[in-house]
Length: 445
Image 1 (cartoon, rainbow, N blue to C red):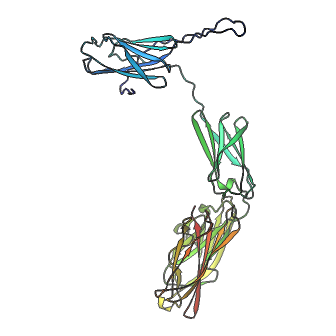
Image 2 (cartoon, rainbow, N blue to C red):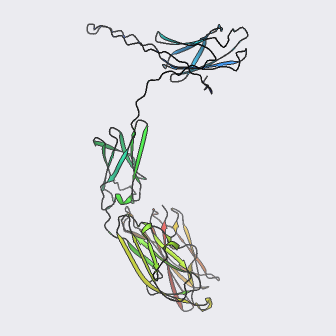
Image 3 (cartoon, helix red, strand yellow):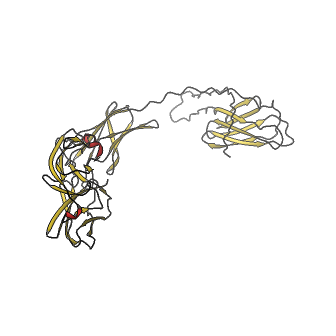
């Protein structure tokens, strides 16, 4: 029966270790005898009853050598109380006082621990006395693990056959390993010198690593574990600046606006470390509008009402490796009543640079003139390693808008992967006019 005592009382134990007795040397193959050491008692505690009356229980708990037989005799009780081993070296038991028991607060309790023919005994002087603590030998202070450095040897590209090499510095004599999320785990690192660990992994054709996969080193020992994670910029040797693409409105375009105008651009860092959003700046006719914009690693979007006139847009950014890019262009705004606009065209279901879920068909909706013909083209671009430079035409179809000017189509990528870019090009014809618009979406990670 295992029962923890809520108000333990410790018994001072004067414990002694019996020495191991070595017999004199005997001839070869002669039998040797070793005298086993006496079992230990490291704690003896009791939770006394509120009163020492018939029907009340006394609870005992002893800590000592595992695998022993533990019994308790209480002065005034004729029965021997046997304790059960509820955990390694932990013994517990209870005794219910009977009417013929003759116990009082001055009664003593004696514990006997027997193992391999040897025994140890300790006595609790009074049932209701709080014994002094058992002296415990000081334990050595555990070593505090530290992982001071985790680094990679940069590579130009992540493709099958590329060897990724990692090094870590930390507490000597421990177990070190690293993991590449979604690729491999528990890859061992060898301690090549005290506290310096090295390991490597060669990319397989089946691996889908983009440079954005977290790489985590783990140092373990003494029941402790410490970890360190690498940034993407620490794996790829990135010397190429990102580019700015899909500027909206386009260079020299005249926007016929009856509401907010969207000024946006996309970033493409090719196989690099990715654009750092904190470095992105967007200026509109010399005014910094970054704080009012939506900024991500993939692009920047600013929406506002603009009076008629000529405007300049200026977008700048740096990637995680510090490579800078800047793009500037101009456009015009003409503010006209809605009735004066000959052919409206807008995508109503998604904002520029929006994320779309992986593995699920996406419905894109738009609005134009009733009965207008709409030509839709969607190209998927995998700009991450593992599918570097791969493009896939996902949609190429003509649609006729309904009587309200609404139209829709579905995007169902065949090779969805995190970071994939979908470039949507929509053109409409109606009322003897033509108009086009673009939209860029990104696969969610």
